[in-house]
Each structure stands twice: as C-alpha cells, then as structure tokens.
Length: 520
Image 1 (spheres, one colour):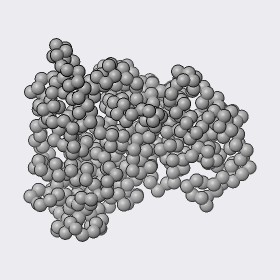
Image 2 (spheres, helix red, strand yellow):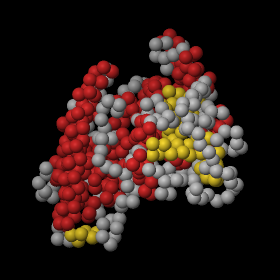
Image 3 (cartoon, one colour):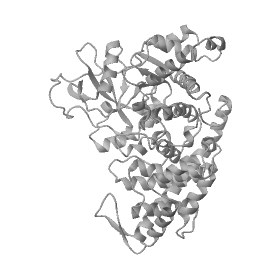
Image 4 (cartoon, one colour):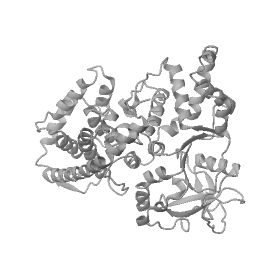
C-alpha cells in the first residue's frame, strides 16, 4: 500500500448536508437536574416503520442534541453508530431535546469527538438516545427494525473507544507493511518490530469490549459502508481485515488458524486466551459480512455462532441477531425466557435441518448435524436455562424427536451425542468434551435425563419463569408440538422466499466471483 493512499483515510471527510430536515429544540435545562424522560420521547408510528434520529445542535455550549422521527419507508439519509455500552454507569450528562440526559463515558467520548470536529450537522442513529429504553413495547418494535436501520444507513461507524495504543504514523507504517507484495522490504524488518507494531494494531482495533458484544455482529454484517474509528484513527473494513490477518501470520507462523465458524466462543476452554479467540473471531465476522450479502443465514446458524456473545439484556442473545437472519421470530421483551427459548430452538432445529438441504446456498456455511444440536447448548447457556429442569428437558426432547424423527426410547440423547462425537475428529475432539462439560453432563447423564422426563408423563410440570403456571405432561407436549407445527409453516414460507430469490443470488454470486467456503 502506498503511503499517500493510506494517509487519506485519516482526513476527516466533508459531509454533504443531503436533504437535511430542520428541527428545533426545547429550552435548555440545568444539566445537573435529575433525568426525566417526559418531553424527550414522543410516540412512534409502528405502521410507518418510524425511527428516531439525532443530530447535534451547533453553536451551543456543551453537547446538545435534538431528536426527530423519520419513516424508513422514506429512505432517510443518516449514519448509524456501532459501539459498546460498557458496564460503566452513566456518569456523563448531555442535553437531549432541551433536557439533561445521562450517558455512559464511551458514548460521551464519541459525541465529544464529533463536536470537536465541527462536523455535527448530519443525522445519526444511536440506540441509547434514539430509543426510549424504559418503554418495553417501543424497544420490542424498534429492535425488530434494527436490521433495516443498519442495512439502510449510508455508513456505519464502529466506535472502538477513545484510547489508541498506536499513533497515526505507526498505523500508516503497519498498513504499509501489510502490503505483501513488498517482499524485499519485509525481509529487512526486525521480527521484533513487526510483532510489536502488530500487537499495538491489535490492541487498538480489536478491543474485547467491542468485539465480544452480540449487537455488533449484525451491525457490522449489514453495513453497506463500514468505517472503524479509535480515538482519531480511522480504518476501512478491508484494511482492518488485512492488518489482522498479517498479525495472525506473525503470531501463528501462517494464516491457517482454526476457523471460528467451527466452534462458538462459549465452547473454548479456559486455556484459550481472549486474544487468541479475537484473532480468529474478528476476521471471521468481517468475512461473514462479505458472504452474508449473497448467502442467507438462518437463525439457528446465528444462534450457534454468536448467541454466546456478551449483552446487557439476556434476550438480546437472540433478538440482537434477528436482523441478519431469515426467521419468523419477532422480538418481545415482555415474554418469559422459556417462551423465547421454545420457538427459537424449534426454528433452529427444524429450519437448519430442512432448509440447509433444500437450499444450494446454505451449504456454503459448512454446517453439519453437530451444529444443529450444539445450537441448543449455546442457547441454554445464553438464556441461563438449566437443561435438567423437567420442562426445559421436555422441550429439548420433543424438539430433537420432531426434527430428527427419533422414536423415543430413552436413549435418543445417547445416540444423538454419540453420533456427533464420532462425526467429528474422534474421542479426543476438544469442543465435544467442552460441550459435555457445560452443565456437567456425561453421556450417561444424558441418557438418564431422557428416562427421567419420560417417567414424568403423568405429572404436572411447572413453568420455570412463571411458577404459578403449571400444565400436565400431555398438555405441555401438545403445546410444544403446536409451536413446532407453526415453525414448520414459517420454514415453508422461508423456503418459498428462498426459492424465489435463489436464482438471482446464484447469478449475483457468479458475477462477483463469490465461490468457495467461508472463513478468514
């Protein structure tokens, strides 16, 4: 890479004020007064697919922002922010719609950086400001639109924080070193210098707090144009991918590292360092971004790969993935966890098992029966549902029977897990051992669990989230099967949609030369 070309990415681009609507703000209030949402958020019209966008008010002291509602049907021009909420409390204060509004330091640092640049007139989507987080109904409706929001934004800015481990000059040097055609120059570099600079690059652009968050996956995957920013350093997605691969070659001696898509993060052992996981995971997410544009992703696949990512709200381990998937699930934060677990598990089993065999494109994700069963383990852990609870175990049993046609005899868990165990690399396969350790399971425990639940067929089973609610074993089985029937209808509709789109997708893949298997 030529230095002059690389340097252009650090020059703050001029923003065109494209058809920017005008808006007014309320009178200013003392920022030290307690927060009140009264007067900040006006109801949104869900029938018009309305969202709120914010922009900073110029020529005023401090950070002051205004909100305005837009319909996604009108294709508004805006930028979307991808960032980490962090666990820090909201200790900073801005003025939103003329009223004091507390925000977390990470978001405040981004807003402050934009205000300092004098480039604050464009409309931006920032979930913490644009969604009334205290209104559960609005949150559910807005989360259902997140896929369209990040897909429709003219640009997604991924804010990695305000602390960079390298200077602009060091970044330019590293990007130049990543030009693999400059063999003569590479041979003259000190291996220690290469490793040190690569480590600084990795620390700057692969912070765990950002990359191990569930929401960033779809925000990055769906972005039409993606720009990473850490403090005053800017980097395009392709440059980040190239830089991380270069660092991985230095660390591993080659670029043939383990494929993240084969093992979700929750199945790594304690001996696997966070840095090692990120060196595999970050390039994989960036690669998925390219492949997902033309290859459909099912909910079961997304759950298997990403439900173990971090999130502040447990339900987001599923809801944070819906926007990039073909799915019939709709977010609803008012439902108990079990009522989220059941339809998601049903669609994971039935959808992945049936659609991967009916679609030419789904085979590109390299899934096998192990991924289908493992998605249940990842989901259980993410939602903190214990598989030994009788009702949870019954759902698992009925789902496996439904999707795989097992005749129940108390040994299907043994046959399922054992077949996957040897479908992999044999008894020494590490991920298989780890999955059995998630809840202290062994093969014998799995068999006994099946027998134990079967013996409860004349009992009353209580809901784990709603203790007063109880149904007989037969009533629960009937309810579970009704969900499975509904899921089969949803999957049939998805198959129909895929059939209509697949010829166009295959043609597009051929034009773009997108062939081969996914992976960094």
